[in-house]
Structures are given as C-alpha cells and as structure tokens.
Amino acid sequence: MGTDEITVLAGGAETGGDLFAVELRMPPGGGPPVMHRHAPSEIYRVLSGELTFYITDTDGRTSRRVAGVGQTVTMAGDTPHTIRNESAQDAVAFGVHAPGGVMEGFTRAAAALAADGPPAMEDVLVLAERHGIEMLGPVPTIDAR
Figure 1 (tube, rainbow, N blue to C red):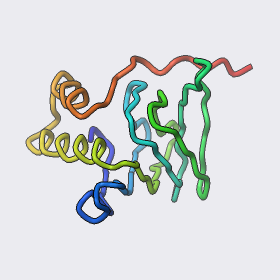
Figure 2: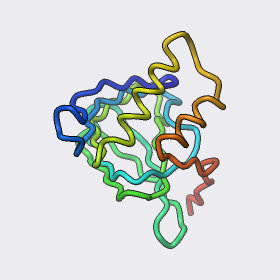
Figure 3: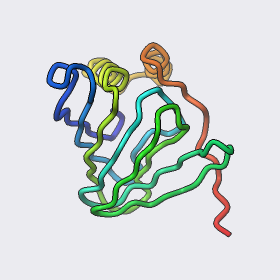
C-alpha cells in the first residue's frame, strides 16, 4: 500500500472475522497521507524503529505520539487518526484490527489494485469509501509548546 508493506498474519478465515493481524513495515516518510477513521479498533506494538501516531480525542484535539521499540498504541473504533514514519529508518510493527473485515477487505483490494503499478489516488479513495474508511483531510499541525 503506497510505500508501506503489509504482511497478513491472520485474517477473517482464521479468526471467524473477529481479527485482522498484520506486520506493517513502513519506510521513512511512509504512512497514510491523511487523517482517517473506521469502525474497527486498532492496536500496534512497535517491533523496530519508531512510528508517529496522530490521534484526535473526543474533545477534537489531535495529539502526536511517538512510539519506539516495545511500545504499544491503541485506538478505539471511529477515532480519527493516522500513522506516519517520521524517522530516518524503517519501522516495523505488529498490528491488529477488531473486527477485522473492514481493514482486511480494504488491504486486499488495495493490493490487487496496485498489482500493476501505483494506483491513482482517486481509485484508492473509492476503495476506502467502499470499505467503510472515511478520509478526513490533512494531518493537523501540532503545537509543540
């Protein structure tokens, strides 16, 4: 998906649709370019490198959290968020979506779309909408004060 590599570890067939577990490998600069939300909850454990999570709370404020090796980040379903690799090295994380169907369907459809080369952004946006992923716009600037 883009420059990110997703290896499916367990999908709906193995978990009765309850979980979608992946290994996510993200190069520097990788990650979804926009904030988004979807019904499944998520948990990530960073295995190498570091990932930056932008998460919007129920009060509408977005926070920036950097997670390094061994750290875990969780997000409830329907939480606006994105994940980026803002470091200079590759990052690897173990991630789980519950329930798994939304992200598994989108991931597999996006991989099929990209089989012949990078897909057009419009096509990815159509896939996201079809799979229940709402794109919310650019990552907000976080005040570092």
